[in-house]
Image 1 (cartoon, rainbow, N blue to C red):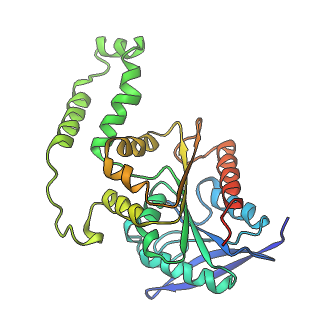
Image 2: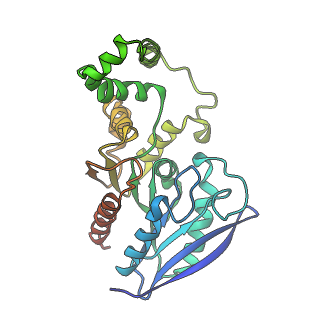
Image 3: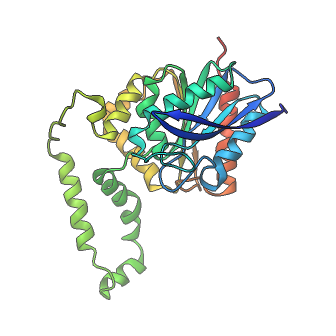
Length: 290
């Protein structure tokens, strides 16, 4: 086990102060992990303290880790503008991470849900980033939601007597839901209108920016996917139905995947948390040497 220290830091991002913690091993590896907070009312500890446990575990292997709060999140100043507007925050975080750990040569981004989306959008524009650990990337849209609901929820419910009992006793009216799903599916088949400023990367829909960023990323990726998350299934549905995503997934040097069958979207149980940390730990241990 490698000894490590935890260093509280405050650093500037476009005139506002961000707060973080650097886990610096006594003999740090040249690859470090930058943990990105997912959306919602979270901070650098992560959902169920997942980021804290991950950081302390990785540090015992010699992997330096930095956890931090975006602008407008946790203890950091400013207004949170959403996961699509985090490029400057990541630039500032990587810079201070390198300052605190001079041995650092490569950065691996760790993020789940919309933090995984932010990673895919930005990684190719961050020269130090050579790897991504992504948990259930957020690609939500009405179309993928409708297809996943039909395939993974209502296809099972129609065989359950409890469902039909509610319908027959007028406790549940399936017509509004069915109508909404039909509209979403028909909308998918219609030609998509050209996005305003489609040549401008930042003006595109976030799913397109994720796909475009993935197609430019040449590092290594580890996908951590939850078996009980419909949002995880939306990602799989999008990839399976879109050849552009299938092509983009061939761009990185390597894409590994690990599925946790009983995990929810946030890997919120201790068993699920420990499994993804152990999987990522093994993945990092096999990092190619130059």
